[in-house]
Image 1 (spheres, one colour):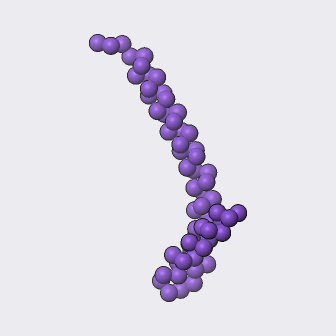
Image 2 (cartoon, rainbow, N blue to C red):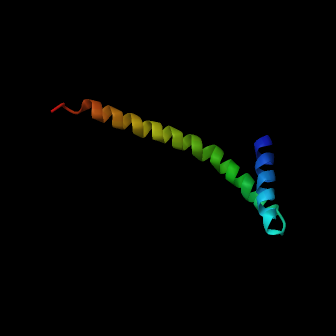
Image 3 (tube, rainbow, N blue to C red):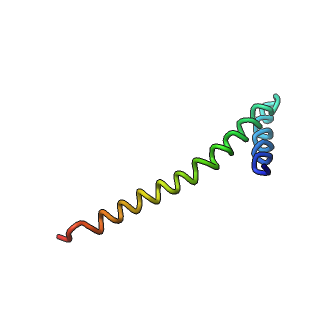
Length: 64
């Protein structure tokens, strides 16, 4: 909840730089924050899995 308020505030300030309203910027900031809260942890997990698979397959290769 606090993160949504902060994201809305930051988005509002960014959108007001052009001299017009900041409502759309606030909405974009909140939606971006909500998406990042779900996408970033998923990307970390998937990256960890990919790294683990790579390390495992390289450790199983015969040494020439």
